[in-house]
Length: 288
Image (cartoon, rainbow, N blue to C red; front, side, top):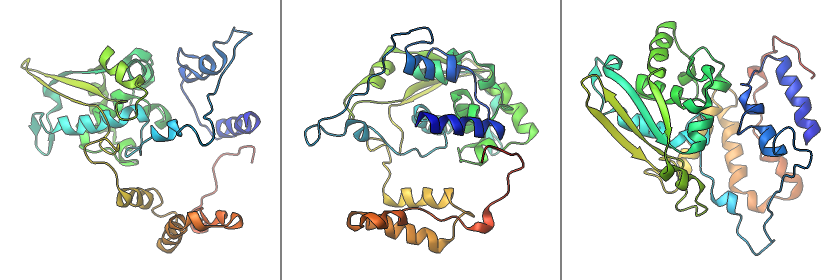
């Protein structure tokens, strides 16, 4: 697996994929997590395995669907920003951004340190940054939600220059703060308690405040609007639009519905087949 991802890393880099340095060498980085720090010769990484037929699959029970094209820690925050947006001063069809003096998000250490202002990464408050950075910037997510009133997987990252200029100014007025309450919820091992949320306070120009909080994403089983089967199928349709035919999508769903009765050599049917006509030749050359 290490060899496979190494080859893929080089391949993607040859195609121009970029990532912020802290992902690899920061306090919460891959190197720190897997090697206990770059200079620890006795580093050990342990993976806890459940006893077959005895323990529940804990990590699976703690997962939930991602409604938004953003990392897990931002799902509830995006829902919160969209919810809070309705309470902000309006200008025409949108929010009067000039009346927003500052926005503070009280949240867990991970959200504050990795995707918040404590990451101290200037790219995270720059709308010209690559999408791979912006989808790990809670400042971008909050600002874009307030600016547009939505967070679509494509439209959220496609902006005119005027939108970027407006967004840049708003992102600079957003900060995250560590709060022990949200840290405790983040690390709680009970799936019914664990939460990746936060509290958001918007200070307006006249000094008044608009505040709200959310513990879990709306789509979470314990959220305001837990996802049901139609929601998953709608996301599949959105993500495969213009990539697969309607008949292929229907065939795939039918195959998934009957997974419990599929034989080993039939498992390959649980794959979507992309329409050949939608594939473009890359402009750059990689390993393969």
